[in-house]
Length: 417
Image (cartoon, rainbow, N blue to C red; front, side):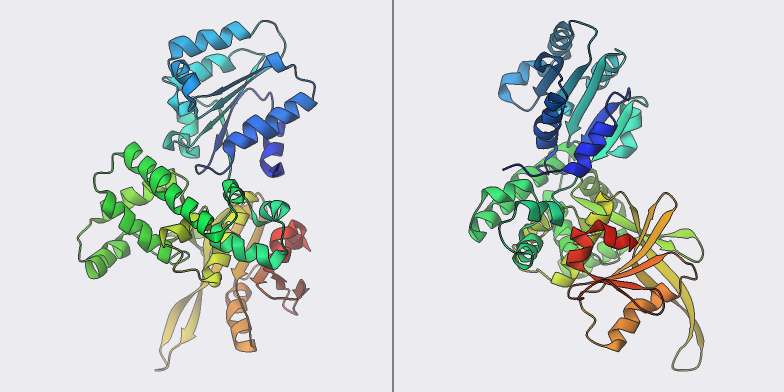
């Protein structure tokens, strides 16, 4: 079964022969290797690239262990470059190659060599790519399957697919398992044996239990505003443990560096500035989040918000939490300044969208509550409310578009109706 990943494949195609190292990043098991060695490799073959002009190496394979030594790998590659034709070097888990920065920079200095690498190591964060590759890196950030990608391989209807997606997530390997028990066991084992082990080992985390307890708190509160100070207080009151804010910040950074979670900062829309802490955190994959909680806490409301966040990131948006300060009068007649929240402020180039995730709007009061912050922005950017059960995309008199989650996820053009 081939799952199309056209968003990422097209990015690789558009970056072909641009003189930079294409660095494919993302959470472990999200399909980076498949993208590179199957989909992109197939594209090169269809374009007529000779097989001997594509050099592949997976450094995490036992048979390639000797090539982790640069003194073995560099001669191997250069020996295979025999003419002036275009060569494509595809490398998986390249962080296992010693002194990989120097090797890759040397390869890209050859005019006929185009280099593509994957890595799940923190060194492949976008903020470090320029440093690691001295300005020669070009990141392609990948995610687990979007709902549209998931449904392209799912055999049931959209409602059944949604139910399974918000429970078991979008790691491509989930399709290898048939029963709920098999899927649950796979995700729980993967979380413990791969993700946590990798984060602890790579970052020299001394207290694994603290990190796991923080994961439990973040998993329980996806989409909730928090910061190291609040989390430190939670450890004190709930766990009866004292963990410094600096330690919690370090743990959060480790989780973000592994691409397991991602944060959204607060942005003052009228003041046109970032407010800072607290932030919201979302999981790259809901199945992993649910596995962390032993599938005990699956609230569709929060799951939908997490899915929307990831979808917007895949579509290339910078995503923040919007804050709109308004003046109100409290019960005592005193004037107060109250912040209204917009779930997502999405920016890409000159485009901006304000999006509210509202699982249900059963009455006019709830509808007014969800739309109020959107109406207070004071600008003409597109405003959208996404619900679970709206019948069809529909504008109201104030110009706010209401659409259902399935149309939003499966028909990207809905954003620009």
